Image (cartoon, rainbow, N blue to C red; front, side):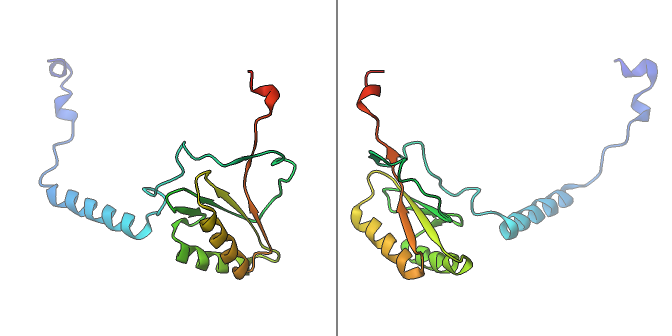
Length: 149
């Protein structure tokens, strides 16, 4: 073996004895740390690649900046800055966010298949919470001249 001529084996530290209990203590502390300080965004679902907003002619001309943004998927999932919310949680979130701002405005990015009744409920909840301007997001519809490319 290559260590025998240089006597390197004698210079190595001895193997640790009985560290099995310390291993389980470390794993337990890591689990407690992640449960207490973990983020709800680590394993939370997000917007998939199939998320498409509806197309509308003149959408870019009517673009406006807003203070807060929410995204709504077809399955009734509503994503805000705090993560995945249901409609009751969204109402509370809208109330707390409206109190933080002087002139609150909201952008609702809804997927193309979201029912209008759900959008109307979200917009009315935002108005009740104090958002003065609620904007529904849309993408610019492709023009006929670019259809042949």
